[in-house]
Image 1 (cartoon, rainbow, N blue to C red):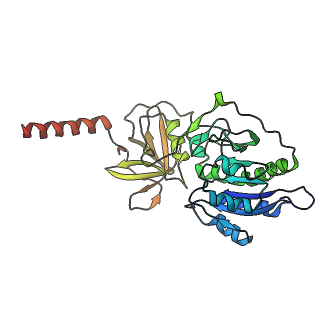
Image 2: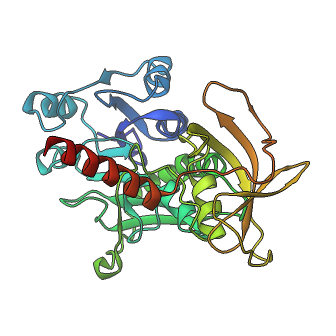
Length: 327
């Protein structure tokens, strides 16, 4: 059902978090009719629900998005279009057939590249200079539908995850509104993705935030900023105590440096200089387990991380000793 005048669309918004809440508020102010909101089973926060309650909209929260009873509830809202912003369930064909204009998804990636999960983190970790924000049609695949609109945003050399996330969150609501406008007007020109050029990103998980000091400085620099706040932070150890590294800096003009990777080789007012696989990197903000956050003041010669090969040999020696005792 559209508004009187036929220029707007009835929209049901599926989503989570600030980007969905901001998108909802923008659509509520637009010429479109927001018919309802669908929350994740386990929302990351209460922002979308709060925005929906403020607007006096019905809120649904299904365990399964393919449940026939839930699909009937969506149908009762008479949507022309379903829009997904950070929703975590696949919208199956039985649901996608309810809105007469189909379903759109907002994705923080330059489709067809960077399909999948944790795309903002991976784009920074991979050293990208820009990140895409894409509104695409939802089909049977994951992030495979035709592209309605796409916008590229810059990633600066020192941008962290928080910086890029804020940029993406700000870009999504107006881009979604433009896409909804075009679909409602019949002026959208979706383009098929080049599936041969597609790449998928896997979700990040506990354990892959640990630094390998033998990697080149650029890769260490990108990992630190790619999972900085609001991410978990890059991790290392000092004297066996876990340390989170929140901020670091590397200048590609810095020369190659001979030394042991993970060793502090310099100090200045901004932090400590640590040897990497090829050059050095400046650690500017750290947080030791149980300690305060601040500028590290470790003495030159401090060793960070562990020697995996050495530790493995030590474990094997202990196993051999135990076996010999059994014999």
